[in-house]
Length: 180
Image (cartoon, rainbow, N blue to C red; front, side, top):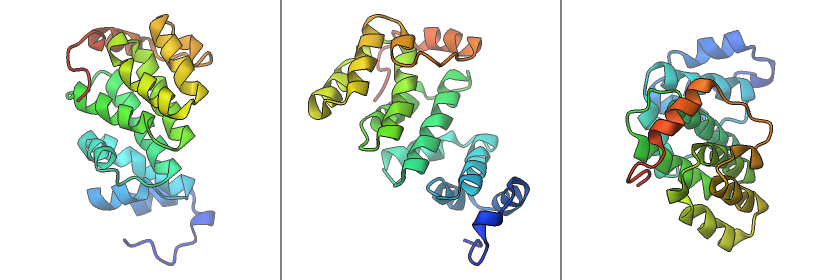
């Protein structure tokens, strides 16, 4: 990658954009794990702009994202993709979120669980129950309760997602084979 010798701490968002824009898809995915917030967050925009969400999904399934930042960035992009209305492969996208929900990093878990809970589909409950049984993490218990009671605010009382997300969640809820 062409970023060696660049002082990342003094980088502006404009400079980060100039550095990231010409990078290949593979190089962009490597930047998901970047510790530089400006560089990593800028890199996240490009697979979305290029409509290459499958790269992010593949990175989650192959577990090539190694850091908290990379996993949280992926979960955020997939959430927007799933509920933003343009998701062509709901089962694979949802499966990637479920993989992140089972991660060891609590921030990645929380971010992915937010999407899973928002969908409020009871058919997914076996996985969060399995994760809760293994870890005892309170976040799983709250997520399970929120899904069971059909109220995402139990899990995330501060989130107020866009109205279009609710419409798309209703469209996906209750589908067979929601995740692979």
